[in-house]
Length: 333
Image (tube, rainbow, N blue to C red):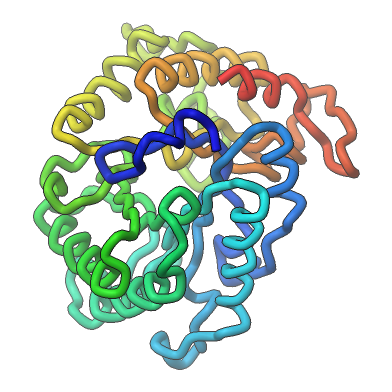
């Protein structure tokens, strides 16, 4: 355990965990076991955190969202054990929860409007709480819902309170994190007092992080990115990031809420030198703020392995293509 982790972990004080998102159960269509090698390599490099964005459809029967598949849940148990074995904290997140997902297709019922969906989501979280009860918070935490959109704050607070109550009824001490509103971008002051930390994002500006990403309606009107970035008459650089992405969350932190960056990174089409310059500014700011982070992703189009960028000289690493420059930058922080 690092010196930073020796401080008591609580919703008001999170360690500066640093690591990656692993996507084996991100969608039902790509539902596969997690790989121990990911945990081993991260630990060998000095990283200590994985976030598991999960789709509940991976572990429910197709005809009944209250029937759980034990064989799939055991694969999540296995990821938790990989983390414990290699000293990597495991953060379990419902990316697709009963009643909500930021990605299509839409759920048949709405978590924000339908009590049945909220009941089912609470049932699932209570099951996870019971399943991992007794595992210390320095090893496992829960991240309730991935990137709630622009819904009324009071609606979100109601849902979070219900899920927190469901978890804490089974495991009163479990560490819980809630994503910010507006897809994780905005701090939620209405959650203060519920005993949860909060998770922000590092995707701004989108012209850098999601250049040519089809799922955000990218079009050829976006100029090829540079950093700092000119947007109209405004220059977006490190000072802009501090004002827009750091300062609002520092105000939340003053109220006794721990902050972590649950996702960040840049898609494979953004020029590599631009990505590295932008990443360095974010990493500087997060270190200054005392916040940890989890890059999206480890292996894949945002990651340090197998990103398939056209402007990177990759290094062979156990049969994978390693972006050594990006890894070396991350290791400085």
